[in-house]
Image (tube, rainbow, N blue to C red; front, side, top):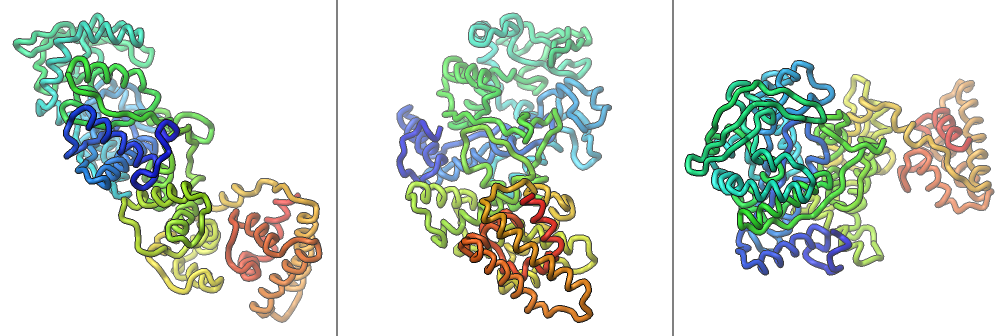
Length: 554
């Protein structure tokens, strides 16, 4: 989408603004009112929601914000598909759920206890909690309640009346023959209470009833037997749901939806729904943009059923809401590999965006600067702070947290004392305190992970390697002296001595001291800058630093 739209500075200059502008232009050409422009995101309720699920809703909200910024009323509809049937038991959930396969998730007991009225409401609440915690506004709609209230009755009626044409269209577009034989509607069998195994056979428009036979179906390449019951249901009573191939279209018309993004895994369904919306329901389908799936570091699709789930709650245990929103807003095109390991980078990248926004760092490329500043505003829900917060590389906070995370002391106070000693901050600040709390969570959960993460061998020039070896040799002598000395070293004198050694060894090996210090920061905290090195190395422990750096250069 970013490449397909004209490179103009629209709104805040981001892909979000370009999409919003395209929506407005399209709606005006269609002759529809743009007083209120609704966008939608579907929330899956059949498994534990992950970052990808949240991304769909967050990006839709960003576009709603952009529409508002352009002078239009807009709202995000968060539609939970909690009438969906459970097709398989997600990895990590209890085996007893096998007894509820094909039953609507809103009728299955909560597998996590009695905290929610159903499996579906528990799963929906997890995603809504994530949206709440990052400041996303939405209007929630439960699929179960929508069907029971009759909101979709007219759409269901018109779709079923045209079921033959729809079945032919689905078969011609996707090769799927099922809906040439059965209606695109899944009744809930009155006897066994299951979806999918009851096939809708005939529709009686006058009575608005569907006849069905519970004869079984193939789900996930496995045949599941029905109970053999045959009966009829009223379409307005919520005793079943439309097939995915047509349900989106029904929602779009019923809720007057003008935008909905989709993942490439449901392209066929979206294409059919577009046709149903325009040709059967007489409603111009919403504007779409296609996004790529989030993959784990192994290259596998992040999936609720596969169990390789990175949830919003997991991320927000170690990273700020802003770091998560930055991940989701930076871009929409391209496959993304994501894991917990990305949090330190995103935390620091947000600080970089903030520095550019407040012109503390100058970005020479004007277009890039505009986009960064725009994304920064969307990350802050178009209500950015009036001044930047204190910026300390997140890995420094992690390292300091590892010293104090397991001690029975006021860890936050101790970390602040260290940061003040390094000259990184003069006072406490709410935003920085929150970062320290997150870094303490990280240190308690992933102690030692950080060292493993940057322990890869660095590519060094010969003079750089020699200079580092020279520094380590001098530091080793100091460490040995400290072990045998009866007189403790003066800390300030020791700090200055270490600082001077690094400076002199850079000069002796024809390296600019500034570049040499940057190299040390890269090896110690994987950052371009940091605290005064002499102080930092002494606090980390000279022998500990020697061990770390020997591993980087060997």
